[in-house]
Length: 311
Ligand code: MN
Ligand code: MN
Picture 1: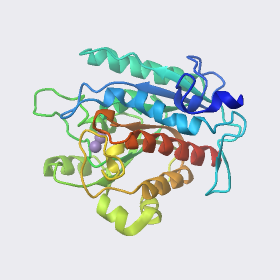
Picture 2: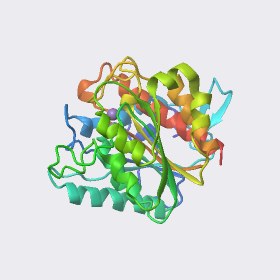
Picture 3: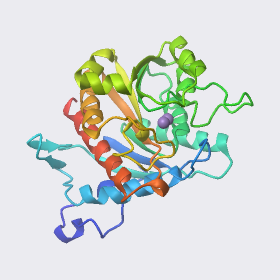
């Protein structure tokens, strides 16, 4: 907005960064879409409130947003997202207990955004939403880069047919015909069974642990990511250290700093065309001072800036 008084963070309707709200993605470069789904978590629900919390936190940045110039980044010394057309598409209507229907609705929304020619930025929601998002890219060859404490590679949690929880989206994605290589960054802690680790390696996944990423730095991590035609990126906010992002369902000590994650993301557009990304598992019910929502909003803008600088 350029109306002066309309720009302050605490007034106006809180779309993501005060981008215009429209259900019509045609003509947009980026469509932000919320998926308020948290019914498949194995612990601590509340991520359904993630999209709304991230939108509220983003008002801070929205107050400095200019539809033509984008945002001025003082560290880069230039504007980001200059001339980029960004919209807030709103949320996918998620209904209690209707997993199949919800997944279809997510795939439909992402397909519509892709058909309109926009890059989908999906705000979760728990990590299960990423399977119906990536499914919408059917027919397009994709590499996937996945940031997470957890591998999310369980086939069937408890062997009871639980195949669409937030514990198995990367396993489900790995089974899609159009998905090629998967790189997983940030694995750590004591909650990934050996069998799941082995399952991911068997599927050809390349795994970079948090301790290696932290010790060796973003350039080393980026060297490990193969060049590809198209790249889809999924960010589970719990890849960050809980000191940076406490508001998430399954926090684990020893995570990445904001700077490290942002620097890795900034290098990904050099690896291939980034065709979409998501930030999931922000859970405002466990957040402190809205810190995690702010981090998610800023991460989205930094990554979008890098993606469109490369185009
Ligand atoms: Mn996850
Ligand atoms: Mn996780």
